[in-house]
Length: 59
Image (tube, rainbow, N blue to C red; front, side, top):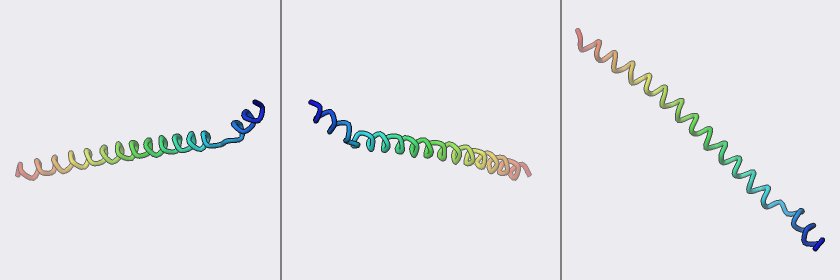
């Protein structure tokens, strides 16, 4: 019994899996943040272009 417990405690496979899960979650979070920033900037640009086109058509 003691040998099995010792062998179990020496294995690191589970720790590597946890590391990959945390790393993947961080990457997904950064992608969501980048998408949100790009969407906000794009919507601002769209509104600016739209306003300029309306202004040009008023002349």
